Image (cartoon, rainbow, N blue to C red):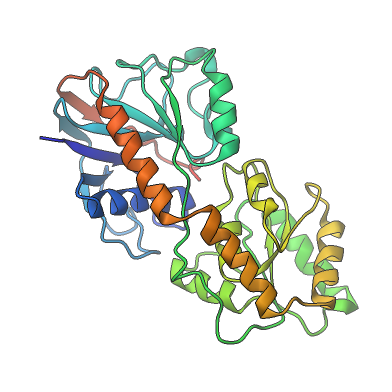
Length: 331
């Protein structure tokens, strides 16, 4: 018996990239012949994601019996001070954002799980940070599982508009300021703005496919998935690398601006719109994403990480779902 790979997930039905990535992991594992599930404390209206389509199997419950072959995958923001959610059982920490590592577990009280958990990460920045933290944290090896982008979903639309798009969730005050600055600037008289907030994954992909420029308003990013999705859709990206997003600003069509420099954002967007790149140039943005973040590599690295985790000794036991309410820190 190979055992299950069980992802403890938040009970939140709003667009959160980290939750989507966990569902994606389960989809890839099931497709590869592994037994994998998403574990929610409660499956009910408003408790599980409906903003994206997924065939990943789900289970619910406050507790779960694990056998010696199972792997419990715990997000970094579910790691609680001095608490082991499944003593003696095989566990992995999935850290998608190094800035959330100590949200509920200060480093001095980081839990000493039995056995010591490997840590999976999804960006180069998080990999480098966690490798250094191993000197003070009771964790095992750190393994990079790169993300991939659904290139069939995030793609250019048949026609592109003079459309400016951003997501306000992490910088709502700056979002309001940008709206006013655009209205005050004659250079944007024929430019339409769409603020993506609460849209489904497919609706967001449709907006990005029509847009000319995506403004990256990330903050404390582990990776910055919307930037990669915007590039796959052919958008020019202007904005903030915000930490882990730095690897994405190596792509053609990206323009990094100093953090919180709202006038720098406005002026760079105006420069892009003054000489909009043709679609053949935008195709290079998309090609870069397909080359740097292919699904085949994500699947291979994920399967390798699962196989490595299974080499750790473990015993049967009971897991308690580590969710906190409210999970405002999860992203």
